[in-house]
Structures are given as C-alpha cells and as structure tokens.
Image (tube, rainbow, N blue to C red; front, side, top):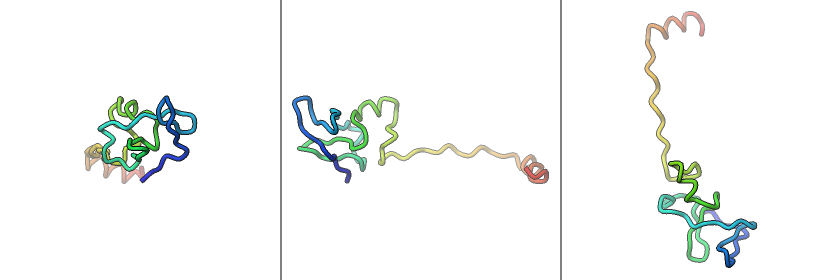
Length: 87
C-alpha cells in the first residue's frame, strides 16, 4: 500500500509538500494508490482525484482494466501480396 510522505493536517486540509490534497472519490475504491491518513483516504499519486475522473477514467487507476480494440481484419490476398513484395 502506498504512503503519504510528509503529510501534515492543517486548517486548510491535509497538505503534502505544500499542496492541499483532496480525499478520494467512490470510483477510486480498490485502487492500489489509495492510502489512509488520519481516518481518511487519499490518492498517493494525484492531489485532486475527483478531477482525474472527470474526463472518464483516471490514468493512475490500478483497478480499472483498459479495453483494447480488436485488431483490424486483414485481407489474406493483400497480405500475401505484401509478403511477396517484402513489405
């Protein structure tokens, strides 16, 4: 499990290296980067997890599987001609 190094609780919230960090959102549940600090959960990689999920999927999420598009179908006749030409 990841840890928050140099985390300090201030009046503004939890601060790490001078930057205020926000608690994780529900979509972060199960991610390996989530760590506990004084009873709350925070992301060890990004200060505002809600903003990372705004575009669809967080690129730091370790618990979300990326779907790879299926390979395009190749015409076997054209493939054999390319192979014969050495391409």
